[in-house]
Image 1 (cartoon, rainbow, N blue to C red):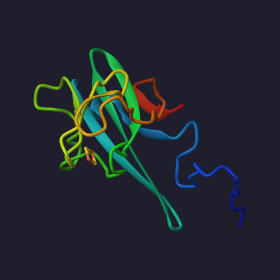
Image 2: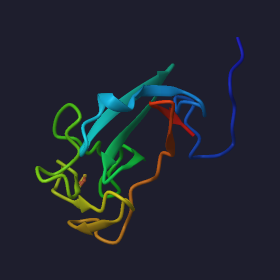
Image 3: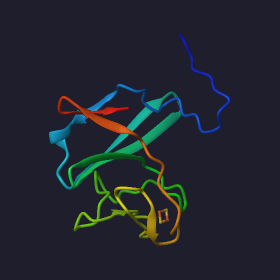
Image 4: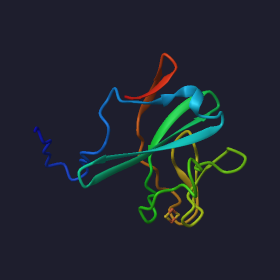
Length: 126
Ligand code: FES
């Protein structure tokens, strides 16, 4: 068995590699979002993708305030009007296109990007 080893403290062996197919683009409403969890042994990676304004974006599902996952339920990452990403923990709001927190306890900090792209109608990790 090959085991990946890294000295990078941010390395997460559960993070899916480039080329991993996440879902069909049509599986995500516009605007809407969808969460994913990957496991590798004891490590977990959580990320989510969102569609809004014709863009498909991805972020690591970890709030910069307290490190909690953002969603308040399955695939519930956006505010009701679809204009912001909402952290259910303490109500932080983030700009979907940049991940910047504009309101809440982590204002001025940003979500970590999880770069994805659409290939032949499928959302793929870049
Ligand atoms: S954990 Fe997100 S606002 Fe506190």
